[in-house]
Image 1 (cartoon, rainbow, N blue to C red):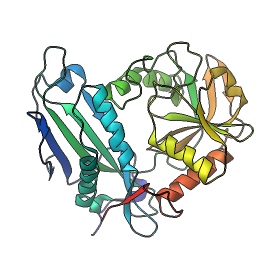
Image 2: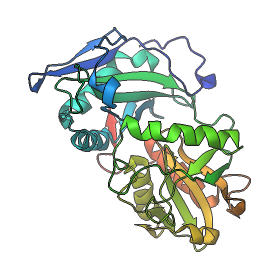
Image 3: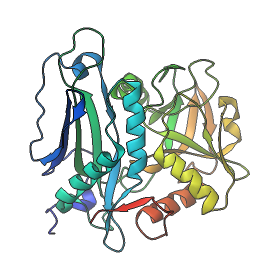
Amino acid sequence: MEKKNIDWANLGFGYMKTDYRYVSNFTNGAWDAGSITEDDQITMSECAGVLQYAQTVFEGLKAYTTEDGKVVVFRPDLNADRMIASAKRLEMPEFPKERFIDAIDQVVKANMAWVPPFGSGATLYLRPYMFGINPVIGVKPANDYQFRVFGTPVGPYFKGGAKPLTIKVSDFDRAAPNGTGCIKAGLNYAMSLHAIVTAHEEGYDENMYLDPKTRTKVEETGGANFLFVTKDGKVVTPKSDSILPSITRRSLIQVAKDYLGLEAEEREIYLDELGDMAECGLCGTAAVISPVGKIVDHGKEICLPAGMAEMGPVTKKLYDTLTGIQMGKIEAPEGWIRVIE
């Protein structure tokens, strides 16, 4: 299929309308068959549940062209599982796992002309989401829902390479101990908007949120999980019931153990031990790993010695290995890569 006439190498990370998207509606207690449509507009009541009580969940994953010319997506089954968990927490109907994966397949196939070529640094970002659509004025779950998936071509998260970030320890809390921090709900991201705007105004790239109960343990940022490398080369990530179970983070931990032979674990990480870390990164779908050079805790600077000027050596190996797996340069574990045919 002939590709769209786009300057793939200079794409930013933003929305661009593509030709087709997937839509399925939940009414009278069941999902309809779902279909591909060209219509990108959504019509709903002014009193729709999503507008009144923020009843919405979403996912994010990518389709891309591998070195041998195949179009693939990375571990969509885990996105399906996470969306089911998110929906349960917000009293929304589950969208079946097999149908979620099929919807991803359909959207990518329908938009093949929008999947960037290998080597361009660009990908087709996929956004599955679900929301309450019928009128709800009392505080209760909606009865009717809509599940949709759209795709948009995006460039690399970092133009000109990944430069180390400077982040601040936030005074805001991202999630409550028994709240919704562990699901991918729109309301969690709304909670972080004021904090990230404030951080940017103060000259920082991101926030580090601490556990809201004791404010002594590292949790995550507004949109990514943390990954640290200790000075003796061990990979560690924060363990908490109120952070999102990142698919990228879980994949990186497995890569560290099985491909690089590193010791890796998920555990509680305390703010006062960050000075003993050699490297730090933010991990997520958009950039895989974004290196952190400096963490500022109310004026106290914690510098990561291996990542002040560029991505640290262990972080770089993790990044190169995982992206190598995703792009078909390195053999993937079974089930990690889904080929769209």
